[in-house]
Length: 338
Image 1 (cartoon, one colour):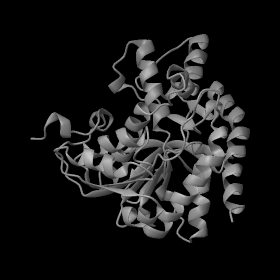
Image 2 (cartoon, rainbow, N blue to C red; image 1 turned 135 degrees about the vertical axis):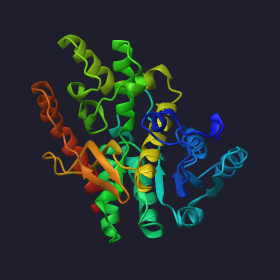
Image 3 (cartoon, helix red, strand yellow; image 1 turned 60 degrees about the vertical axis):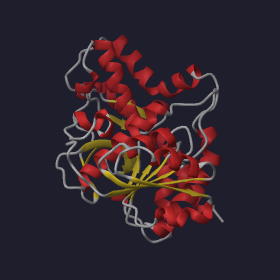
Image 4 (cartoon, rainbow, N blue to C red; image 1 turned 180 degrees about the vertical axis):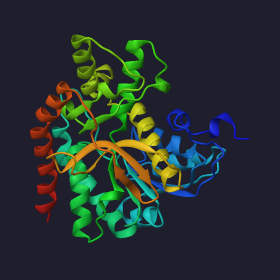
């Protein structure tokens, strides 16, 4: 019998994840010492799905690893420090999660993060392409609308590109939508599921409230307020933290939820569905988040947008230009790299 502490986080539990399932997933966290990386690593260490956890950052990773290694769960933990140790961190990994990068501060847009985080993601994903080309790569580093195209172009340069293994983690948008709808309608958040499609910034975040389970009816003004809150929830946290950071704890939870779903599917569990920002033919945008059926080899089937309302169609249309611009910016970044 597993202790309460060694169970995975609630999202995986509530979606039918068996706590008795044993797995041997080797997971690396790149950016493990940061505001997202530390709580994310804690949640991964906590899961019976993970047998080996390797942590990488440019500072403090030996300390984070030592701290986590004292927890009475089976995953072994090792810290790697600096670029020269990155290859050893990645060798043999099944899943790599990348929360590395600078966080948003008040007044910063996701585009303001671009130059710093684009370089970090390009460097780290180049190492993944070289040292664990078969691993699933889950990108948390913002702006996701650009960092996923960056990752794809880097993998193409190394001749190991597989679009079914590169995921932009947009799970936090789903988690927030579920929480906010539950709060608004007095529902149990564990039973609410709102698909969120599009991208992962501002108006590119498109919650499909019409597809919410259980079904919810909202007057137009309430619907507009709810969607606005979901789209600007990151800014809500940045403001509330008053310069002390961005969404780290909820992002760590969402990142862990996505990794657990992915590992479950890699282990052969059927019917695992998560929304994620991936290479897509569902719209005119070359990358787009929709519900995906996950499988042993990553993305098994894109479940598409499904039936939507005219209001939601308008949201998709108005997001396209911004999304395409962010995607192009990421692709151009890699083309112009020396």
